[in-house]
Image 1 (cartoon, rainbow, N blue to C red):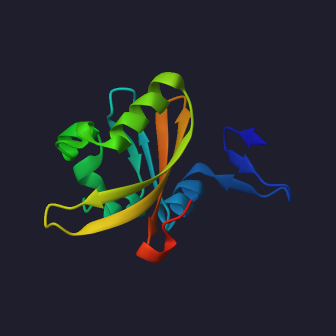
Image 2: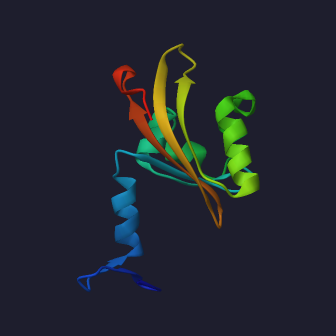
Length: 130
């Protein structure tokens, strides 16, 4: 049950918005929310780490400002489709950093009232199956 004070669990305890944000901020899974204009509305610590940026570098800026060239990637094509069609998607995404190193992430993209939510989980080479 949702309330203006927070979320009420089945046991009656209320998880206030600040505590909920603290929990999400500490996840190992990345979470980011992008507006329809591709502006970062929310980024947790893990998502910032995955992109090798700080949260402060991302907040209020667009995805394309923060990651030039991202609009030519398969990930952006999928993000755009999810944003326009209000649909969900799952993909394995290879991210190449400016230093040439690469990392794989499982991305779960979901529509929300604010735009899209992207959940990201780092994957080792041996875990590359969905």
